[in-house]
Image 1 (cartoon, rainbow, N blue to C red):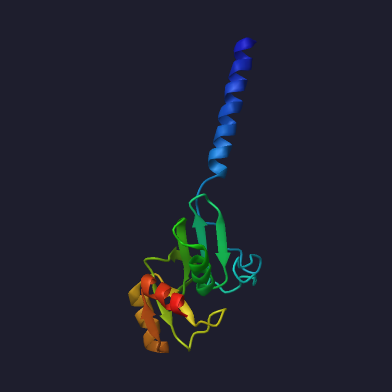
Image 2 (image 1 turned 120 degrees about the vertical axis):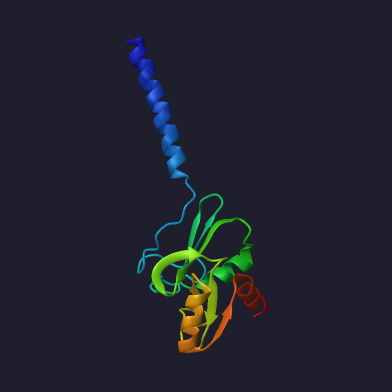
Length: 151
């Protein structure tokens, strides 16, 4: 009887530890289009070609309706505490990709939700393909941050 009680106690402790471990995992969340709101401008996120998301090193997730909202939020609040900075890949709507390694296009022929005409791409080749059809200027992550810092 005593052995059974000890086994239950140990099992309960292991269960609680497992629940704590898995509930605190640091990972991106799926954006629920039409339901989630942008943390920066409070608009409902509906555009799966321009959305973005950051996850802090503590696991807190912030979702954005536009890449420019994420950039402005990061510049305002500092961007060194992020485990993930993700943007929607314009060429693959709804697919989130790593923001710092992505390419960016500002083209007046491609409106974005907040009016900056900013789109993100998982590769420079994809950005160039869309640029050929729509004109505009291609930027790296550091260049687009600088562009928004000065504006």
